[in-house]
Image (tube, rainbow, N blue to C red; front, side, top):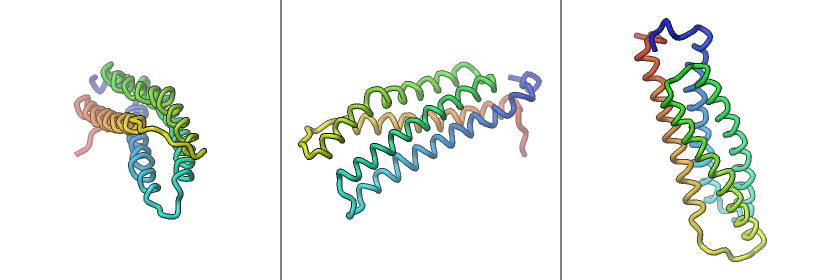
Length: 160
């Protein structure tokens, strides 16, 4: 898109879209890939308590992610980004949908059983959840990189 086609009102969106994606990616890194694994290394924290805290954390994270997704869509639409950017957003949304509607409820049932002292069979649910987190992270970072490249090619923001 040439510079003339970028309305002044959409410049904020061109700044906000990658900012939202980067903040979301940072949240994923901090919660899913740093705080959660470290929590399970604390010797004084029992497994049921760690799972209970994790359950509360990931339910809150999911709510925040839905807000981030809405903000990302709003900024991408306002910035009039090329259509393929929306395909990336749709993949992120699909991951979030799978996590929210399929994985979290199943993981909640496992946590409830463990807290109740029941033995639970091995499962790949956590692996699937982590795979979704990793895919979202890669997509969000790729989206950010693509929007920054779009800025440069369109000459929207000049820097030396």
